Amino acid sequence: MKATILTLASCTLLASIGCGSRGDSEPLPVSTIDGTPYLLTEEPADAQEIIAARASAQDRQTVAVVGRIGGSADPWVKGRAAFSIVDLSLTSCSDMEDHQCKVPWDYCCETDDLAAATALVKIVDAEGKLLQADARQLLKLSELQTVVVRGTAQRDDAGNLTLLASGIFVRR
View: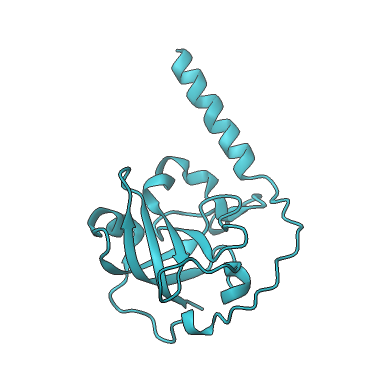
């Protein structure tokens, strides 16, 4: 009984935090890095959705993965060219009629499935170093955009998938 109450309380807390306001009023730092070389002009034809890539991609394997930017109230890594993406099979609040959610990219209605349907994207240079620029400014990205990421899979012991991106295609 206590476990059920605790689980219910946790879900309620997550939903209320996730569907709240973003509170992001700081201006983005100005980047001197040109993001153009990281933008792909053609969509990779072999892109997998995140759930499939998490199941099949091997560490250090070259992959193409498609997803929507989101997964939390703030899917961006501040000051770095990194962000999270979510599998296209999950529904954001913006895809629901009459949604009142101020932060639909946090997928607060999908909390049970979110962990297994998310990947971290890190845009890296030719030496594999994370770019020191905000991804929103670098590539003109925003929450809920669908992107196709070309890069190298990086796996951890927990099965999480990070994509060391050499290129991003933004679906319009």
